[in-house]
Image (cartoon, rainbow, N blue to C red; front, side, top):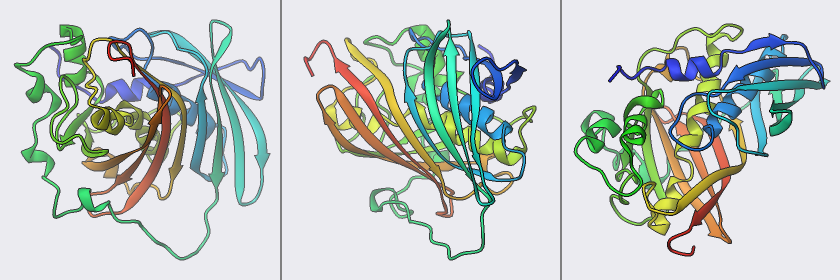
Length: 310
């Protein structure tokens, strides 16, 4: 087995300029390997973020994205991202990005950029159930590879086990416990994760390190955002008949990570909002270890339990 590496992420957000067919600019990118029938949704979000950022040359910073997943994307295949330059103002710029595969749109988003200006600052604290007094340091929690080493069951194949263990580019350590084979810990509507790249993030052509780090948050956020819903519904990932899919996604970047921050541990606090009619919504917030609130994610997904009738 090869050593886990964050190159999975940097390969995903490495774009190739292309001739625009629909809008003003175009890039292509390749979805990364995964053991599911469709590509990982974070590939599309991060690739679209990278495409939008490469279209803004006046120093503005990405501060929000609002996305819809239109169709499943093929794995290991090229996606064409077309960028429309909707507005460039002194303080804000807006882009529309559409991802096309096999001639059809698979993803669409609006991305907004801000120049930034002097102003008061506030950073929300991690929720009480993920506060410093309740948190176990990541070094004292098992990695996914350590947790899964001697476990199997359900729909967990050796391929998916290897992917969960080291194929995602990021080390993820759960509190109160993972939801791979069973829901570990209480069936509560919230959880926290410590998240860190397996190794130092590599440079990405066309992106500054600061923009690459924002793309890293956009990339990693989708892996686990539905997990607080799975936890409270008692639906582990390996449950026979469980089918999930990302439907829509919104993300706000409140402050840019300081240089090197994205290479270390970040806290990702997540909470289930609602679940009904085969859909569920959850909110997640990224914090630095000292409590600075970096970004907020809200996502709705399909959650279909074919065995249990949910």
